[in-house]
Length: 351
Ligand code: ASP
Image (tube, rainbow, N blue to C red; front, side, top):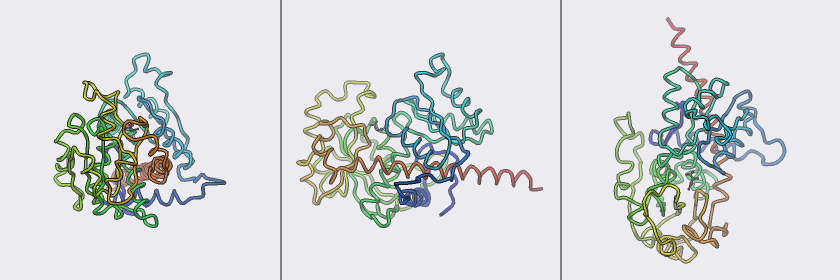
């Protein structure tokens, strides 16, 4: 496996092709472990993983906790409703409390963009070795979802070799509320990073034109894109255009809780124009898989019948693939921390 040098995982803009390869390769190994009998590996025995979800979650939090337990780590769960947040404690002070208890990895979700990053920076500044893994921040990023979608698609296209190469020259449509979706942003980095082209489709109020340049600028702090096979992004308002020629479609939840203005008034019309259904899939040139990150508004972004048709809709596979992907991320971050601190120790002890 190639070198993994990230202490924290905030977003995927800095990921190289080797990083995608490391995550998918390790996830495949974890996925191939027996699913019955003794399911635990001792890899993270004695480590402590803390989930700090300041915003609700069903899938992501429990999947991280299960992943940590499968690797034999201890797991601590922070619940905002019964915590000192109610007494005015800040997210950073909450995080530092768990760091003082010896947490090795903080998995953080917050409704405000950049809270996980600010906490990671504060830990670096204070010389704390704890890693931060972004479990979803505002509209910005949801890297583990981007990676599990990538893994699900790689498994669909190349079941015997589900690696980044499975995505090269594929055309993936992402449909719906792009504007409010941190999943779409992480998908854009991951899919184009592995050489796929992405067609974004949605009404003008939910798909601003700037998205066509989303991956064009080099990531902050770098002079050039670490990836030279990066795919392209195209925009369309027409679902028919998006689906014709697509190899897969990812449909997104309408994020009503993040809609500040009246961006969408008529849900029936939205379903008619952008809903993914068995009928709309007739525009595709072949049968293609449908992904959805969940939770779902049944009958809005996807029809109930299609959601329950598991020969086409991969939502169950996405959920189960989330576990090996998160095992891989926890493992890589924890072991890189050892490597990074060993090299710091070496540097300090060398004359
Ligand atoms: N569960 C995903 C997220 O946290 C998608 C969604 O909420 O629509 O971003």
